[in-house]
Image (cartoon, rainbow, N blue to C red; front, side, top):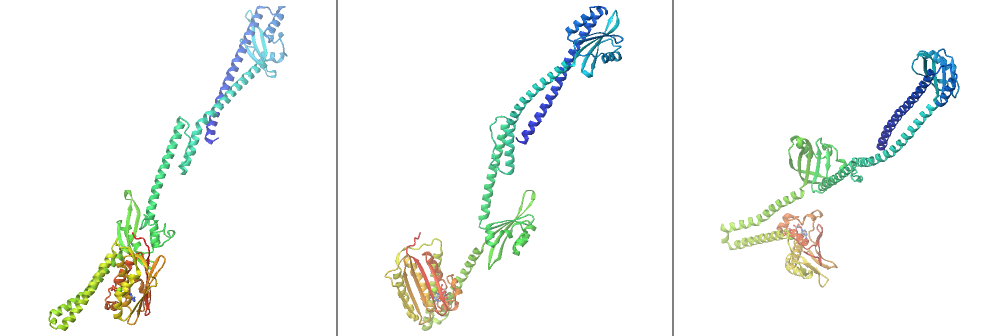
Length: 586
Ligand code: ATP
Ligand code: MG
């Protein structure tokens, strides 16, 4: 039984018991006094009757004794008659006699009485009713009627036991009904209380029974509606929280939230990855302890002081490299101008800056490369116009230089066009089945004269009858012309350039190796950049602009192949190209 029900029941039962006991006492008293009054009344009447009889008859009459005896027997009472001096005149009826005490009490206490009076002899619990009797208007003595108190006692007991029995029975009935009614009313309340407590703990799945149609039923219904609403609300809030969390964690930029007192409250995953930090060393610390970069601390201080948005580019050292960040910081000001903190967003713009730098370099390089041949063409033409053209020999010599420079310009422009074409998005090559052996022999034929001119031994060794690949014949030729002409260019007289091709299961592998000047290992990653030349003076003499390998790299990638380079300074270089035999191009 729950505490609430017990208390309710206890209060109810105590109230009922009090009422019943009070009622019992009252009823008992009423019944008792009613009975005693009736009894006294009767005795009074009987005594009056005897007194009347006595006043009619003379006291000395012979048959008075027998009359009195008869009267006492009829009345079933004990009758005592005494005179004014206390002399016993008559005595009759059953029971013991107590003359002395009775007579002395009458003489001492009731001598002057004119009406009836009562005497109770304590010793035997005897009740006497006394009444003076008169003859010719003169008081002659007293009639004393006696009846045992036992009968009174008996009646009293009967009244009380009847009352106790009936009230006890009603108490039991009331108790049974009370338990039933209270349980009917308290059970829904108890269940609702339990559910309300569960809700307060945060368990919004708790529900109570709704099997009553009265007020308690309404209470259960309301509790259930409340629980459902709370559950819906928390679910919606959780969803929102989840979405926000996912957004914050997965956004590409680093995000930091600092509260109004300067403590870091939130660090997202992107920031942790960018700066390679552990959130434990960062969260809930003061911003100037958490951040190690002075620039960021300065920026935060600026926002704290000025309360305006700040956008700034920062170059921050991170481990071994330095990265560019665009940092956006904004104060968070809530309703009523309440200062809530600062939000900082870090965009990593290193790549953008690099591209921008590349674009600038490209423009500078192109202008520089164009400037040299154009200056010389212009210079020679001016000299010719100034009169040198009259000398045929000089004219021919200058014109041949002008032609050479124009060729160089043309090839540079062609290279640039090629490069811009292959670098363009959506650049497509015309894929077809082709034989690498045939392509390499064609290139060999084209470049053989150049090799002979340079007195370099150019050789080709392909064991397989055919080396099939999927690719664009012209682009593949371009790749190998660039590589082999590089090999010829950077191999001194008497050196060797050797070409091989291998037909493997999934790939075809071509190597172009020379015994030329070779390259330092540090230079290798850079030679595929546009305009990159190792020995600027020498390669310019060779007519190179540094675009050849950039084009090669793009074309190999367009074929979904790989290019690799091994080189030792003074010993030679080997380029290895792996091409796929049945790559799916889409
Ligand atoms: P071009 O655009 O006319 O080809 P280039 O030959 O100078 O000019 P790349 O072909 O891109 O330019 O080569 C870049 C640089 O790499 C060259 O300047 C040269 O220094 C170096 N290089 C390329 N191939 C070799 C090689 N086989 N041996 C030694 N150095 C080489
Ligand atoms: Mg080249």
